[in-house]
Amino acid sequence: MLRTKSLLLMGLLAALALGLSACSAPPSPNWPGVTVSGDVAYLAAGPYVYAVRVSDGTQVWRYPADKSSARRIYFAPPTLTEDGQLLIGSEGSEHVLISLDPQTGAELWSQPFTGARDKWIGAPLAVNGLIYAPNADHSLYVLNGQGALQRKFTADGALWSQPVALNGMIYVTSLDHHLHALDPRAPIQTDADGNPAWQAAWSLDLGGATPGGITVGPDGLLYIGTFNSEVVAVDPARRQIVRRYRAEGWVWGPPAVDGQALYFGDVNGRIYGFALDGDSLWPVLQPDDAILSTPLIFDGQLIFTTETGGLVAVRNGEVTWRKAPGGKLHGPAVAAGKYLLVAPTGEIMLAAYDGNGLQAWTFTPAK
Amino acid sequence: MWDLLIVTPLTNALIWIYNLVGQNFGLAIILFTVLIRLLTWPLNAQQIRSSQVMQELQNDKEWLAIQEKYKKDREKLAQEQMRIYKERGYNPFSGCLPTLIQLPIIFGLYQSLIRALASTPLGLLQLSRSLYPGLNAVSLIPLNSRFGWMDLGQPESIAIFGFAFPTLAVIVALTTWLQFKLTMPATAPNPKDQTAAMNSMMSIYMPLLLGYFTMTYASGLAIYFITTNLFGILQSVVMGRANWKNLLPAKQTAGQKSKK
Image (tube, rainbow over all chains, first blue to last red; front, side, top):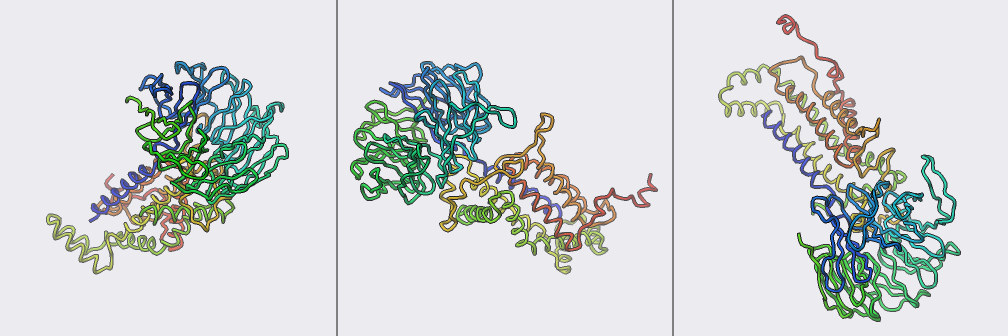
């Protein structure tokens, strides 16, 4: 009996070990990122970064080229700099920011930047010879063109989205519910640990977490989606919210803004269109599931991506076509000349469509 | 079903408590654990009493007699053992019940802890779908995962002379060992005492195993283990069953001394 009891206890402990192992985080905590330059699309999707020809979907190069060297995870959208670098940050257990040659995929920096303590989820911003790299460890790292740290700004929450530059200022949103405005001309200070620090010129409470970034409108306002179920328009000159556009669910990605209106989706799959002055353009649509990214204005229509894998085109408040490339679609559609590109999380890693929803090609890398 | 009945309610309970204790997730885990232990107090009390009964049986004349008489007939021995259990009102599996009940709590707590702390975009999306409407979590999300020097969503360690020392793992192992030692009945060493032998084995393996878990998984789970261990010790003290003498080196009997 005692032997049975001890075996039972051992079995329970083994079950505990197995159960906790099964409780581990999923292998893909984020979704792929895509950037397009000319005829090449750069796709960060898991252990590799791919360069894919837009005209026909063929692979130009893969980084790392050798499978045995593929030990990092890349999902943040790559960034192309003015001086011809392709910047990508990694997630997983190694948090590095690397620079690649966009033509060949070769590493450009002698050492990757390893000064961050957490995942690279948002894309870096490259402007005026400096790199502004947002990290989930709450810091915005400012690097020079060779990857050397110049200074850093630290918020109270993780930075998951790309900063924007406007009128000489840098703006970044954080999961700490704030928009932070940073002046690159401010003198470099030193924090308590002796590291070069950067204080925000001002910060604004937006009322909810803001994981998705900022859209700069043609009117010079900053449009930001928040988990407070709204999009806010911030006037950076007045440092305040000047308009609010209410939604029924959390708004993840910033809106698309043309001269007259703004458009966005929420995590419940609803699609909204507002005139800039706040009037609703058309009844709320709900064609599919969660929308986490900015719609693409393409060929006179709005292209939304939905979590269940739907590619939805909307024109004048009506759904004109829908496609399902296969897999889930969390990231935005990206314009690439006459095509729009989407990066599903599935067997097909990149797909190209024309403005009528006709599929041009798909990209599935060789194993 | 597991998500609907266990993980989602636990996640919302943790967030509700988190807001109650001033947006401190460590305190939320501690308070949650205390509530769970209070609810399972009767079961744990039964386990402590069962352990006492079992220990007394090891020195019972009738028990020892049937061990000797039926040592070659396992079936008959088992029958006689069950008869004695029944006469003494003892359920041999009652000691496992608290552990069995704790298992889904541990699994559920770990999953809800990881979900609530949502350190990735897909994690945050999953969390957004788990929140009950009345919770009003917009002002709380994302949760503050810091508790002292630790990130509750990550394994814990402190850098000492360049070496990552797993402080919580050591505390978990120590408190687990302490709880085992204090709740083991105090008896004179008896080489034929199987219960004591099993307890002695468990008092070594269990702390090591839980310490290993703590090193590997999110430190929020360690907070749960430490709290539950300390509460278990407290319960033994309140019930008057804490055997502090077990912490001292075992005294040899006169017979064992004379053999030398």
